[in-house]
Length: 247
Image (cartoon, rainbow, N blue to C red; front, side, top):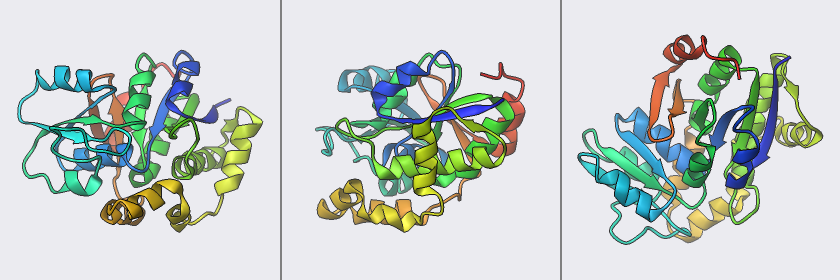
């Protein structure tokens, strides 16, 4: 029987690397930035540290540095961790992305048999690929400062609810509770989250509105190979991965 679990925080990934396909969620804003950048034709390289950012960038052409550390754009970076910012980049660029939680979670997921990048934008495509390709899935929200964030848990819960409706089983009571907590919730609920308030208070309302107004509008799946995230159209993604190992 197929099953799923919902968890949170970068430190959680290690519990599931050997047994589950991993879905990484950081709605405000890392995974939204990744999916947005890829849908605009850019290449995305998530990194866990400033040193790794410099190392990776040294091997890439036409690099844009994007991201934040503790909410602040690092010195020398071109952009903050901003979906509005990456959507405005012209041409096709290599984006090295460093964030406080989301890219750390992606780095912590390295070694899993399959790692997916999800946000509000690609809910359906991600769910369809999971159903076609796997039997055990961990949906992990990035959280912040040791605490889950409602926006990440909502996306995990919505994917989990869709899996449940297709006969999948929640692996523990906490997962059941997460799905029920956000069942039927409006995306506007996220306006009251601490992350949303931070964006408002730091004059980054454009990113907040971008996230809340782009729901299930990208019919593609973000796939992380440990170095680079690629975006596969939903049908192609299912076709390419349906012959996987079923983890």
